[in-house]
Length: 265
Image 1 (cartoon, rainbow, N blue to C red):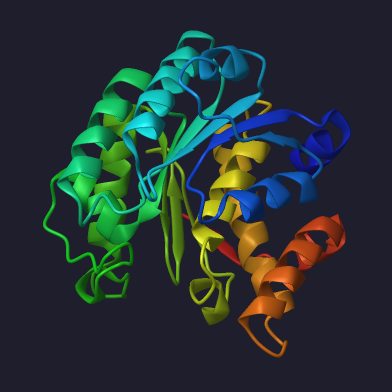
Image 2: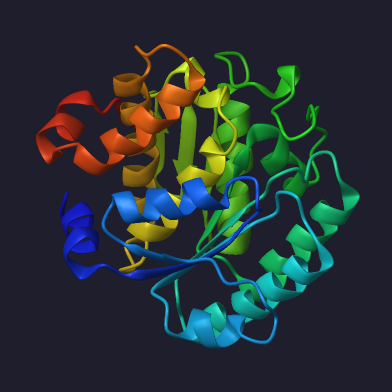
């Protein structure tokens, strides 16, 4: 839990270039864990802002020419200055534009973390996938039958890129090519609210800001799932989102340790 405390005490500045659909919720997620968000995306200022930040997050949702230009500038700056960064592969399984851009970003900016659902990760790897819009395709859902195969795909991508790979789903899989964590926290309502995946990216950026890439990614992913479980007994999806952010803000280390469900492979 030292990472969690470091962020709360250090209040790192997190630069997040994301889509307008989820930008407010993402900023509030960063604030909820004690960090400070800045959501700048103008191409003429993003390098300067990334330079003074402790971590960078970029998100391919609702992509535009300006945002694509800004993300690449910031990604190159982060790589040059050894600032941890995460890319969220939103929609690369259903859009050639996003897929080609993501591959270029990974090649030139070398993100610390590559995050997406299984369909999106497969698309990046050049493996046939069945993405349904920005959602994972039915045939790409992790099951006991394809579990080992999918883990190997993720491990290979991690070794090729030097990035921690995070595949989200019913079982979240996080690997650095050597150690693989399987996290089973979460609830169905997390998939029923727009932007929860983007919010997880905000948490990952916050928790990798002091350089603990694998551990920070595992903590962020588990925390999102745990707080989803704690928030699901509500009237509906709107109150769920409010409760989710409240639980992210207030959860104790003891509750995290008690509720976390993971296996190390």
